Image (cartoon, rainbow, N blue to C red):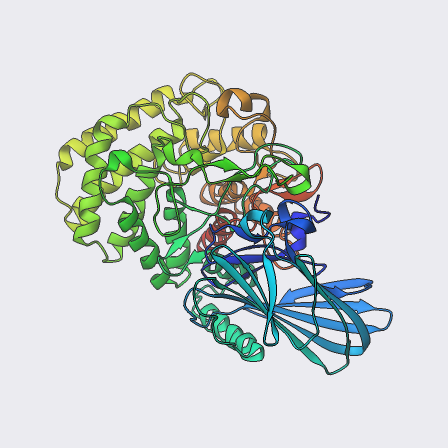
Length: 591
């Protein structure tokens, strides 16, 4: 069982995959060569025996770390009785075929510090022990299609599938370690200068961060979130994964553990808005192109989630040899949500295309996609679905799902009016108005003056905060204000944070046992709703509370456990950081 908290980790990335490194200097998670590839370090979901790469002082008293400003270059300072050292961690952004390179440089800052390195490579999600051999001055591990090469001037010993080393670093010394993954059937990649990799990574990230056009009071938090989103982007296709991890629990010891190393269509609208409004039009267009390629074809077969390259087949299975983070089993690989029917994704697709059309980017491919989506939705909108939260119980008529079906028709009408989209516009208007009337009649409870989670049920859902944000009703409408107040009253859990819905009815609603933490994206949606209904002081206060939940290097998980006061869920979570960026931008506009 890992002794670490989720917030103890920092992110390293090369825009194809990512690694998580703990405060204690252990790389406990790395999948190569893609986000969704099998992990070669899986201690995050088990123990050191499931694979990790430790590089730290033999004994330490204090740890302090930070990213170099506007970069994904991590510096960790260790204080010991005999001196201090700094470990610099980054991943190479230099194109080198399929290879993945992780660089760690130990720098002596004062005195002389005894150090240790432990390298346990376990391919196949912590299951497969590779063969180790020395090749020239390197150590090479091979198992099936995977190979890892460690290059360092330090003498390394092999002990039954693990490698270790002890050495002393003195003030002024810089000792590099370079770990490179490559396909075992291909020639070894060339050796890259570790100092150059660090300098190149720093230059690359700073140049990228300089493109940010947001100059508001929360610029540091916004830029860090944007860098995190860029790190979660699969550069070859432009798709953005929800998180680089799988099965980090929503409840410690619970079973709400899901694989998030894929791309969700529900994130499309928020991602396009955040990237475009912050000055990253290239990334927004790349995400659009990924979307268009991925959903091309029969809209009836549109999935809610795809692989980073647009893959459809993401079979879900359990790695039963891994005990899970904090003994939270099962560890799931893949995601069965691919087979679900969710109405909201059609609205998300239409909304994302409308955003681009307003910027003059509405081409024939987009017209075709929107036309196909609307043709399918003409009959499909009235069907029950699994809802935005991917419930695993019986389908329902979820109110938010119907609202997003309304969005699909509303945006199609607007695109027809503003950008010349061809189609049966009058019929689209009729269906749009029909959905609106039905939602207001069946999804609204007049006695409590609030919209409800699903037709005929009393439960609330934080997704309903997006009703004014998508334009379904104006912010001044009493039903909107009533819904915001009801959600704050009934779904708040500690410090104003929100649950998605009440834990007491989760088994009935989503078909999964157990509880979960406050959902951070929903809490950012509350910030947005409060902003647009004119309660900016409340919105700013909540936003500051949410910023305080970030870990020491500015990262957020999916959820927050208000009882244990710690982050839970997959980490770092794109939806949380998207919420942060969009809330900051909206508050800036409101001000």
